[in-house]
Image 1: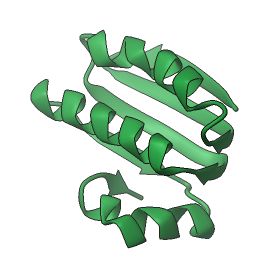
Image 2: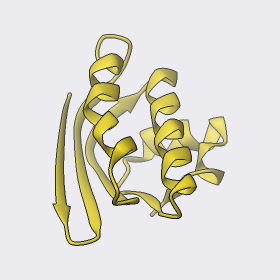
Image 3: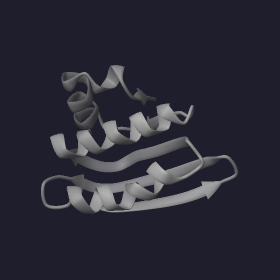
Length: 100
């Protein structure tokens, strides 16, 4: 799994590629940690090439959502594959995190 982060003005763009599972969830959290401490709370995550997320990945998305909300920002996940979106729907995360 790879995480690419780019800052553009007042927004941060993240691109995820691959799977988020037990073998790489710790690395995903380490990659995302700078976003938790950044001053820029508006984050857009492109999930076009994200193949899967486990419950550990969902937990990290929730941590990021809470951080963004506390800073008055927004988190948007976009271009999610139907199978991945189904995981967010079944777990109720679709009602917590904005998915477009």
